[in-house]
Length: 318
Image 1 (spheres, rainbow, N blue to C red):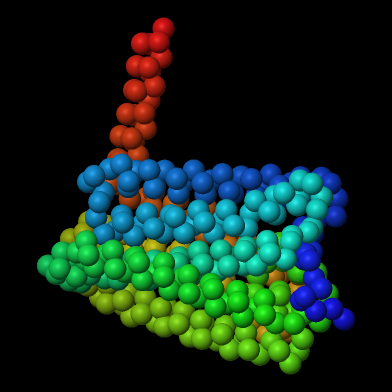
Image 2 (image 1 turned 120 degrees about the horizontal axis):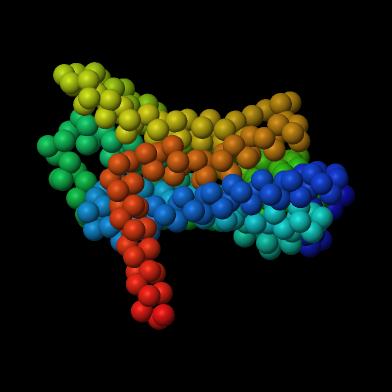
């Protein structure tokens, strides 16, 4: 028996037993994190520097990229460190900070995916009212509300989770600090409080999901009424990637947080957590953002300009 006051650190899940597999996991995490950093970094740079991309869609896309960068930088570096140095420990305060930041960024991601769904709905179903419904002030207010609600949600979960007495040691069955794994260590008659908070968050997430489904039903109805096949294809090409990202993220996260204990196993928990915490930040730029022709043109222009400036500096110095 132990309690939270006597715990100075937690033991994270060991991803492999042999040194070769540990290095393999390190390389895999390194490759995924570099892909996420490169893709999201390019999006942020292109939207920030390209004045013609200062539209509501790209504004929310920039915020989504920021949340993706934050979420993957919260969990993956510590897992890479542990794999490289054959370690499992994370301090108590470090675990609390990691949990807070992770919930903060994934909550913001859910919010921005929902707002981007609303953006698609207005642009396709109510194009004449797009400038009114999604003006600069409205976009700023929606982004501020998304970040503020994510902060409050993360603060609530972190304070509630780490106020629980822990009676089952300090070994977490996950490669990062997550609420379900900490609840497994809590005393059985105390964890119901956090389950109630999780239920409220799940209800709000389900509300976002219902809103997205209803929005996409209206979007698809409007798209099917477009007379030209090229117009329908363009509309579907902007909606389906967003729907794919959304489905992967919400389904895996909901399964991880709401699955019954009888379905829990170390390998399943690890696979599901990778799908909702590591894969989406790396895939979002590829299957959603970088498919946009305007964004690709802006990236090409930005990279060409940087190459030209570098060449001129080299020749002038020579």
